[in-house]
View 1 (cartoon, rainbow, N blue to C red):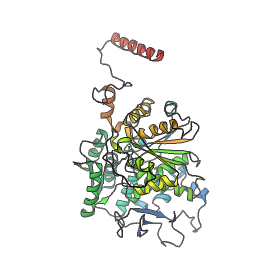
View 2: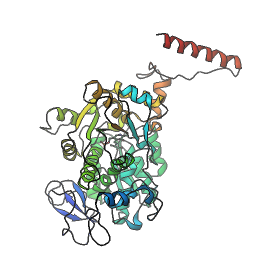
View 3: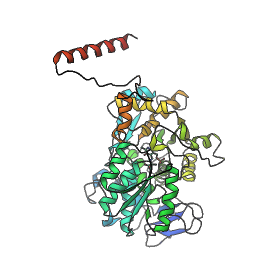
View 4: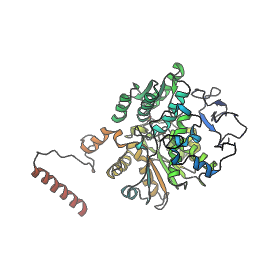
Length: 454
Ligand code: F0G
């Protein structure tokens, strides 16, 4: 199948929806959650960007079209998603529902590079988005589509970040939001956001996979617009993580692009973005995509080891609740993304995730646990000799450190299972006297001296 529509295809339309499985096409504004012919997942296919006279844009023209100076210029949107509208949703017009989002930094932190064993490791920090995770990039496009199609309500299943994002964008759009989350398994910050932004919140007795099955059924029967990452417009928005980081690198792709993986929506979106960027000539070669799962929730990593011979499902368990997913929805698309980029799928243990997180946190950057899987993955691949120290590597940090304050308190102050971590930064309670302050400083100095002597 072609990456873009051919010139004579779908006359008058900028984009269509096409079934991944049977190639049936639907108009861009059809709200069907899946292919009406075969039930397959729908994907958006655009016309490649054109000049006003109808002639095709070359790579330089496309780069100019999406250049950052356009952000506050002609289109007036200070958004790192809508800057890429011609490659995402060309016809959004006045329906755009934006906070705005994107424009996230690429950070270089020596302590994190040294930890991973990779000299110039760059961190694309998606925790800088308005609700603190990469989900806002897909959600601004999904919510805009909900406005365009006149949806009466929007819904999703979530491990917490998608629900926070949906709640914020539904509020912005003035459309009621409904979220399905696994009871007792959502990090405190995410739950707090979801409630604060006003979404109706259902605490489901079941895991994320059960929530996803339920929301699909409920949205089919109740006519609610589904905004999970199987929604093709969410995928379009999430592509902009890749477009933006390539732009930040002056369109010179890294050798490896590493991301945490759960439901595989982002892996699928990254594959689509790279395919399109390559087809447009924006990049001359593809980076190798690396998806990193938590060891207790790693069906995709297990299948990779077996050449993706079968689709696997597991009962998921991991400290990284964001990626506690056993039956990922975007499986086939993610397989394609890994195959096309000569990619790698691996898994890291909870201890490795926590260790990487504490390193990223202590560098003053911070991220939520699931995000640290990417850096833990880089460290593992360096140790396995697959990534060399001089390779150019971008690791995506998907969520903000404050998403999970409960875990931070436990790690640094707690006495429970994860309390008393060797690197815990325990707060010290003191009398209100300078002598107490001096005593604490002396104790800390002694600790540092002992650590340095060791
Ligand atoms: N990192 C974070 C912080 C996430 O919240 C998620 C997914 C992922 C990584 C994995 O991305 O699912 O596209 O492979 N969170 C979803 C949610 C499931 O409901 O917030 P994926």
